[in-house]
Image (tube, rainbow, N blue to C red; front, side):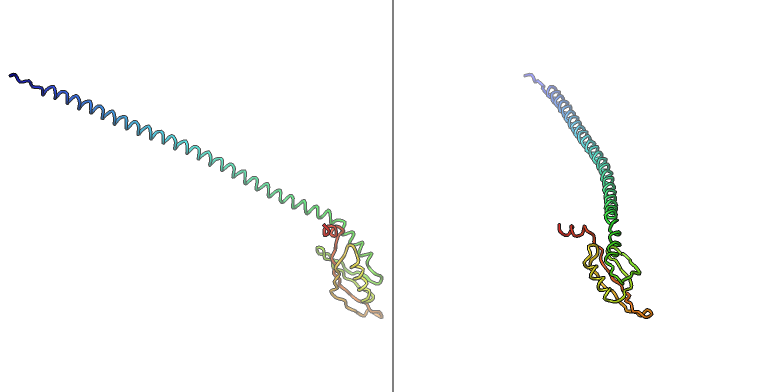
Length: 188
């Protein structure tokens, strides 16, 4: 019986399968490396896009901070201007008050009372003078209390001195200057 050797055929088939397996494995490795490289490229693109967005946001934030500083500067300038306007308005409003004060002092001054000094600090007015008697100083105090432009009279001192044959009273009186607008502001 003849013997048939099938080994070389099987050997060739095994080599062919090993070659196909090697090619398939190399192809799978190439595809896997390609997929990894493609994934890395996609992620690096996403990272670059996010970095560019972050940089744009940072640039916009810097611009907004500049705008905020400019707005703050304008607000401070506005407040300074408003304060100046308020001061000017107060000065304009108080301009006639000095005239009223001098007019009122002249009207309320009783006979026998002579002024030697008048000093104003804010709304407080210091009146220095000489009277023929201390009762004249009392009359001055009553008239100041009834005045429309002066209020709250306070006597600091009244000294009676001898001047030749007559006696006189040197006095210092403090009054508060008021304006006609103060009463309307209190009513509201």
